Picture 1: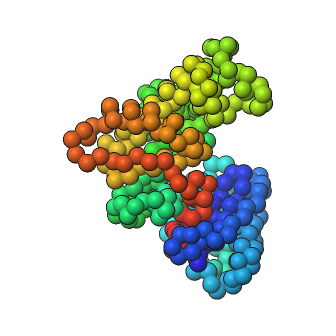
Picture 2: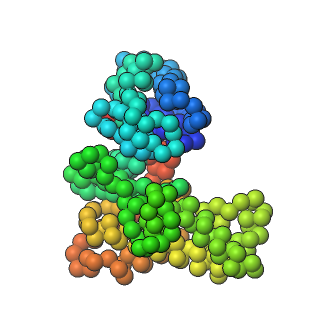
Picture 3: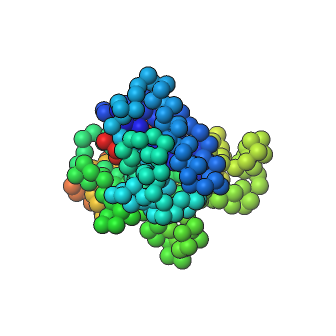
Length: 311
C-alpha cells in the first residue's frame, strides 16, 4: 500500500491507496498555511500515521508516501523549490516528514499527481493522456508513454499560462492574457459578476443574493433555468476552455484529454459546447482524434495520483 497526500492551501487531504490505485481510507486536516513549514509537514506525517492505524495496518506495510504540492518541486530530491501560497520555499519536505514517520517520501507537483490519478482510473491504457483542471487556476498534467512528462527541470505542463489573449486580462503570474485568466473558475466568477452588472434584470443577481455569494455554479444554474444573460456567460466561458484545449491537442495530439476541477461536475452542460467549439477549430479533421472526457475522480485525484507517484 501507499499513502497519497494532497497539500492544498485550505486542507491537507490524505488517503491510504492500494497498489492498484484503490482508495482504501481517507481523511483531512486544515492546512493553516500561515504556520511554518515544519508544523505543516508534521501534521502530514501524523495524519498518515492515523490513516495507517485506522486501516489496521503497520508502518512497514506502507511502501512509500507521495506528496502533491501546488508549486515547483524537485521530485528527484523530495525538496520544495517554491510554493505560492504556503511558506515552504527551498525546503526539504521529504527529510522533514521522515523525522515523524520514517517511510520513503516522494514529492511531486499537485497537477501532475491529479493527472496520474486520473490516468490510472480512466486513462483506458492510453499511451498519451492529459488532465486539465479548472479551479482557482488552470492546472495541467501530461502523461506520455505511460509516464509523467515533467520537462528537463521538472517545471513542465504549466498550460494555464500559455497566452490566450495577447495583452488581455491580468493573471496572477504577472503576465496578461493567460488561459488561466479566462478559463479558471476564478475567471468564470469575474465574468459572471460583469454580466450581472450589465444585466440587473438577470436571475443571476437574485441567485447570488439568496446564496450570499457568486460562485462558479451561478451562471450554469441560471442558464439551465432559461436566463439568457447567464447562457451567454456559459457559452463564452466554454469557448475559452475549448480554445486552450484546442491548442494542447494541436501540439500533443494525446489520445485522451480529461477535464477536471469542480466545474467539470457540470458534465455534458459544459462538455457539449466545449466539444462543439473543438470540432470546429481543431487542426486535425482527417485522422483519429483526441477523445475529450470529464474527470472521474474529482477531489480524490490528487490523493490517488500522489500515491501512484510514490509507486
